Length: 594
Image (cartoon, one colour):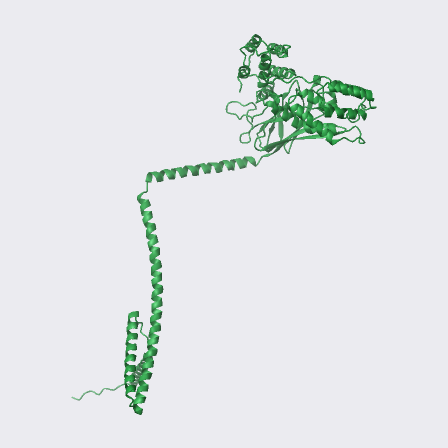
C-alpha cells in the first residue's frame, strides 16, 4: 500500500518563512547588543570582574613586554603585538567602567547605611520613650488619677459657674446708667459740708425693703466725715467765687453703674460746725449757724432737686432716698420711723478725727487744707480794680495762719476770725470810706499787738485800712472781732469740744427724735454738758476715773462716740460729777450699737 502524499498549503509555507526570518533577526540583534549588556551584579561580583580584567591585562602586557625584550619582531609580530595592546586597552577601559559602577554602588550603599543608622537612632529614641512610658504606666495609681479627674471636674464646674455669673452680671449691667449727685452751697463762710451716699443693691432689678431686715440687702457704709468712695464711684470738690454772687462750694458724687432696683440714701455732714462764723466772712453768725444746701440728682433720664438747711442744730442730716427704676429716677417717700432709722444710721456711723476730735493734728491739717484756697482768694480780692495786692504778703499771711493753727495756738474760731480780718468788703457794699488818720493807725497797732494775730496779718490789715478799704464803723468792728485772745488748747486729759457744747446738744436733739432717750432725760444730759470746768482747773484728775472706760461704757450703751468723748472730757476736768453721770446713764434707755 502506498503512503499517502502530504500536500502543504501555501499559507503554511508563508507563515513558516515569516517566523524563520523573525527568529533570525532576533538572534542577530542579540549578537550585536550583547556587548552593551551590563548585568546587575552585586558589589562583590563587580569587584571580582574588575580583578579578573586587570589580571588579564596585566598578563597580556607582561607577555608583550617579554616579546619586546627579545627584540626579534617580524611585521606579523608587530601587528599581533599591536592588537594585543589594543585589546588590553579595551579591557582597561572596561575595568574603569566597572570601577565607576562599583563606586556608584558603593556610594549608594553608604547612603543607605546612613539612612539605616538614622533609622536605628530614631528607633532607639522611640524605644527609650516606650521604656519611660512603660515605667510610668507601671507606677500608675488609679486612685490618684481618679482624684485628679474629680479635681479637674470640680474646677471645670467652678469655671462654668463663674462664666454663668459673668453672663448674668453682663445682662444686669446692660441696663446700668450713670448717676450724679451735685451738692452746692453759697456764702456759708468757713463751713465745710460733705456729701455722703449709701447704696442698697437691688436684686435682679427689683427693689428690696427700704429698711434692711433679715435676708435683705444692707446699705454700703457711711461715716460722719469724708466717706470713702467705693469701687465704681468717685467724688470731687470745687470752689467758685464771683464778685457779685459771692462764693460757692460744690461737691459732685458719681456712680458709674446705677442699676434698676438700686436705692441711694443721701446724707449731709457739717464737718467743722464748731468754727465760729462772723458776718465779715460773708456767712451766718454763730446764733444762726446754718447753711442752705441744694442737691441735684440726675441719672440721664430724670433730674430731682432738694433744698435742705444744715448747721449747728442738725450737723449730721439725712437728706433723701431715691430709687433707680427702668424708666426713671424716683424719690422714695419715707415715714417718720424710716427717716429716724436713716438718721440713726448716720449718727452711729464711724466718727473720724475731723468730727470727733477736732483739735487733733489730723483734723487741723484736713480743715486748713480745705480752707487754704478759700483764704487765698479772699485775701487777694480788692474793693476796686485800681488797688493791687502784694501776693507775697498774702502768701506770708497764709503760712503764718497755717503754722499757728496746726501748732494748736489758734482754735478753729480764732482761725476764722483772723482770716476774715483783712478781706475786702462784699461787692456792692458801702463799707469803704476814708482812710483813718495816723493816730488811729498807731492806736490800732497797739491794740492788735495784745492779740495773737500774726504780725504779717497785722501789717497787711493796717496797710489796707490806710488805703480806705473800710468805713470807720466797719474798721472798728473788725478790730473788736479779734480783740480777744484765743482760748487755751485742750488739756492733756483728752480732746473735747469745750469751746462749743452746742454741737453735742444738737446730738441730744437727734437722739431724742430717734427714741434713744426721752425729752426729760435729754434735758438732764443738756444740763450736764453745759457745766463748765472749775476755775482755776482742778490740779489733778478725779480719783478713780478712766477716760477710756467712760467712753467704752457710753458707746456700748449706744451713744455716738463724739458725745461719749465730750462727756468723758468734762468728767476728767471735774465739770461733770461721777454721781450725776451714773444717774444719767441709768435713766437713759439707749440701744445696743450695731
